[in-house]
Amino acid sequence: ELKLFKTKHGHADVPQRCAANPKLGLWVSTQRQTYRYYKAGNKQTSMGMCEERIKNLESIGFKWGKEHVVSKAQSWVEMFEELKLFKTKHGHADVPQRCA
Image 1 (cartoon, rainbow, N blue to C red):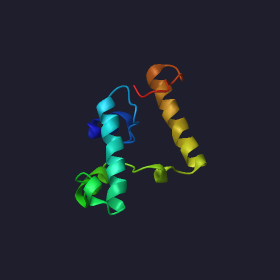
Image 2: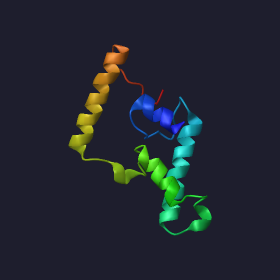
Image 3: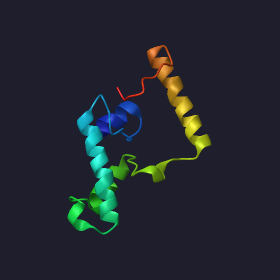
Image 4: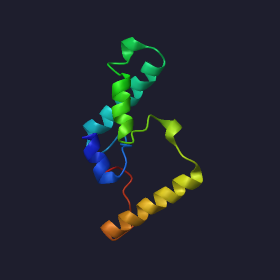
């Protein structure tokens, strides 16, 4: 499902409250949490997180948390480009706040 989301949206940064797929949003949130536990050495609460899973997720552009936030200038340019694509597709730039 994450691969499908990336194909559709061009990224694998699923919001936790994704209206289109709430289960995927929750799953992604869980992956980020278990990653933090894994990296902290807490194997009991890492729920099976391992280097193979990390590599698989990263291979499709998965970001682990706030550390993936790019500079404001780069982020603005990227978001502006996404807005232009949205407008081309939908005929307007009135993007809903929640993922759809």
